[in-house]
Image (cartoon, rainbow, N blue to C red; front, top):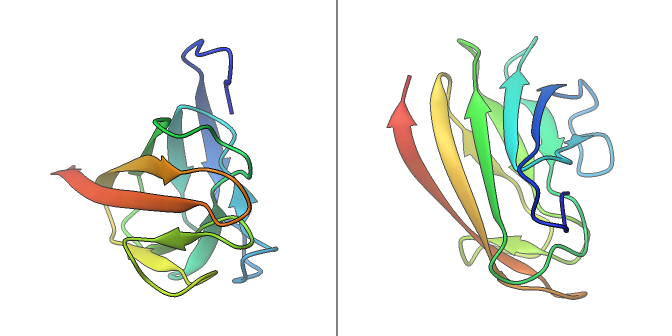
Length: 112
């Protein structure tokens, strides 16, 4: 992730190993994701500072799953559990707490 706060845009293909460890790590500020099979996985990078925003854009007609890094939780869910990123959806992820027990708030921003 661009910790220098330079805006980075990446293209990523969701991983077919549908696990937290097998998800493609989203090392960009804006992540343009393609999905080959429904449920393919992407994972947020570890050690993002509080206040960081990651914009995930699912460019595909198939849903993906988004995992936090190990020890993290998204939208108040259980630690290490994923959330579904629907097909053709733009999602904004905000780091609400950083460190080994990181937390994230993911909000749908647009349908493509």
